[in-house]
Length: 66
Image 1 (cartoon, helix red, strand yellow):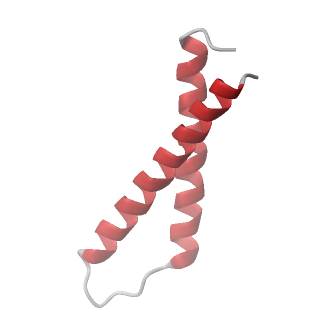
Image 2 (image 1 turned 135 degrees about the vertical axis):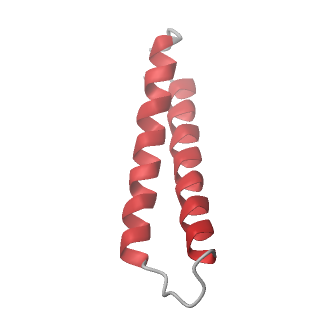
Image 3 (image 1 turned 30 degrees about the vertical axis):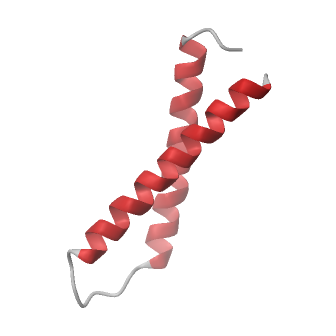
């Protein structure tokens, strides 16, 4: 696995994580008076990071990176 491929996977993971965080915070902000559910949020953030990493890996393989 090349350094460039690892960087692409890390970028995908970061993008997935940030997308999940933004989605959760936006949803929480639209429901005033509710308590933020950290256990649910953390699970979603991990899932977002994992899906972003896997998605970027698939794209990189499709582009011929190895």
